[in-house]
Length: 83
Image 1 (cartoon, rainbow, N blue to C red):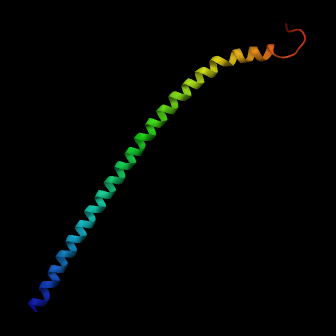
Image 2 (cartoon, rainbow, N blue to C red):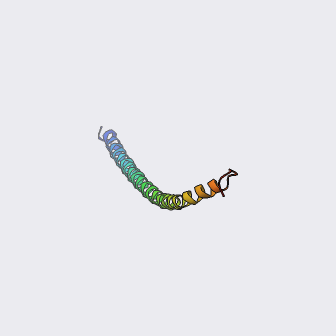
Image 3 (tube, one colour):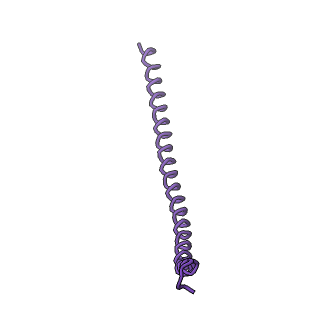
C-alpha cells in the first residue's frame, strides 16, 4: 500500500509545481500587456502633441491669409463701380 501512495504524492507535487509555473507565466503575460498598453498611450500622447502643433500652425497661417484673400477676391470681380 505504501508503494501505491508514494507515486500519487509525487504526482500531486509535480502538478502543483506545474500549476505554479503556469500562474507565473500568466502574471508575467498580464504585466507585459499592461506595459504595452502604457507604451501605446505614451505614443498616442506624443502623436497628439505633434498633431496639435501642426494644427496650431495651420490655423495661424489661414487666419493671416483670410483677409488678403477676401480683398483680392472682391477686387477680382468684374463689377462696375470697382476700380
